[in-house]
Length: 173
Image 1 (cartoon, one colour):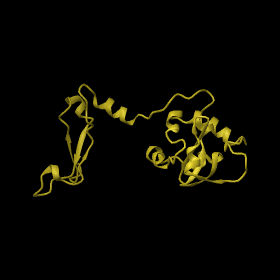
Image 2 (cartoon, helix red, strand yellow):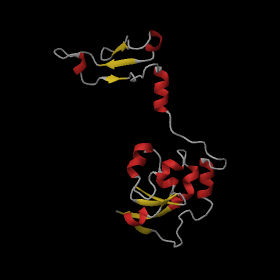
Image 3 (cartoon, one colour):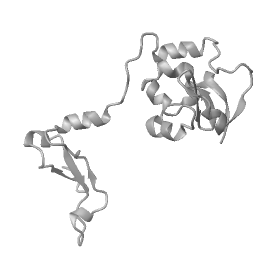
Image 4 (tube, helix red, strand yellow):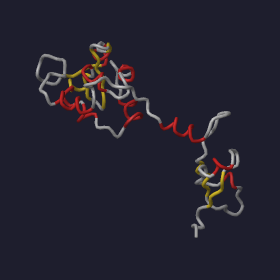
């Protein structure tokens, strides 16, 4: 027997065969309130364009913008490059430096791309070909503080461990 705290009603705006997959979940009505003013209403029904199936709309919204990587540019290949001992920092001196916003802005080309993430500056030049979103996505934050965009896009990724060999220094805005 379903829980009395949850009521499921099928959506009638799509054909009956497709309505089985889409439901609107609402809490039970409180006396004196209309159903539209109820708190905790969660709609699982996607807004559909004319002639669009609900399933394709949901799949399209969940799809990530990945690009096809060239051979030799997988995540495993990046891990091998990081542990190879090659200088991925792109700077000649051994220590970490303080990077101002003006200096960071000078590194915004495809051949010399730095970005600030979480208060640290990384040289992304060597990582360009390995990024699943492609060079274009990385160039959006080249020469800038990319922390906000990074956290909005993929906050679950540990950039500190992924780009540890590319650390140039600390960001001083």
